[in-house]
Length: 572
Image 1 (cartoon, rainbow, N blue to C red):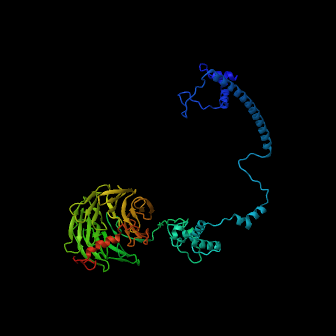
Image 2 (image 1 turned 120 degrees about the horizontal axis):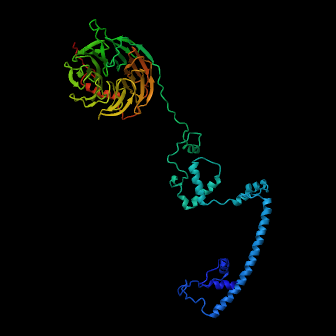
Image 3 (image 1 turned 45 degrees about the vertical axis):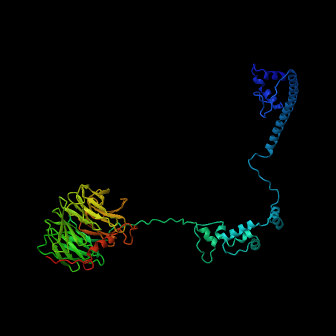
């Protein structure tokens, strides 16, 4: 059989039999490797000259005899291997059956605990065994121990390992490598380092406790305190004969904490400090038909300006209850007044705006014409550089203080009368305006470039606006149908709350000097005082200019007079 396989291997014209492949492979494994295996070329891999595989018949016969002997040997080996494999398989099966009954298969080794634990504990705690196991401290280990104790335990005295420390010091003195340890910087030998030094411990507290507690943070989160706005007014006062007219401005709160309200032909003053009420003047019989159409306090002082139906503007000293002067010029009622230091601006139904210099006899210094209908809203900016005017022609004009010929910006985005006007006291060039019933929108303007920043649709007539001096908020008053006061956040423009109680449209708003209380007057002839803001809070921004600072800047123009007071000409 082997001779046949051999003959088949060297007969290249006949294909190999697949059944004999296993036998051929076993034959090649058992065959001794010859140094010559490459057939191409005249030299082998080692560079030695090749000899022909079968050079003559004698060599061929000798190789055949060697193959026969090797095949006989391989047969005997394969027989012994097969028998040994069968025996080992049978033994494994028997052993697996026997072992499966005794111990379960598992993936971990469980040691036996047959030995007594007391004996093992004795061997571990015996001093002789510990002394044998314990190695002598090397200089590096001693250095590490000293550095660890100095960094963690600092200068505290401990009873443990005192003898080891004394021995280590002796070795350090002998070794020149450790002699420089004391002179070197102690930070280089610290095991643990912190960016910030730990604070010195108070007496009775260990340094280690401070180190470990330094990185702990408070788990308690700071709770945001939400401001509670009362839904009920603090005080309600009657206001009989109050004129329910949208185009008039009949309420103002002075810097001396005195609230002025026009009731028919007269003006009443209410002092918020002592709650005293007084009448500014008693109208004559000839003046009973005339009514007060506008009220405005000077920025600092006890002088109040009054507009009347005959187009006249009067100045009164409230402390003396005496009229200082009267300034004519308008052809119809004066419905809006606004102060800028010693300049008093008045807006009338005759569509004109006058600038009155109260220091001189010829008081009319400028005439502004930019509206085609009645001027019902008028307000100077806190820095005194711009004047905003609103009219019944749905136009908002921004005037420059140094130019009187034409407005700096003409804004026509409102679709109803623009009466509600107020400048932001803590953001320069920010103006808020409100439209009438057909518009019902609150708009915010950048008066530096005339752009509309944002718009709120309030849903009802906007009668008045008032910015807070202590919060980034503002209050708006409205007409039909709820007659409410709305408190808004800025710049998010989210509504905080609505304050209801009036039974008619809320025509006017006034803010107390401390910025905490808002007074509202409505067509139901009542004054209501709302505690909306806190006088202790202040705006947390240095870049924002407060109203007081703007007043200080504007009052510097009065330096030529008697320390900020104004000399008025008593002209009647």
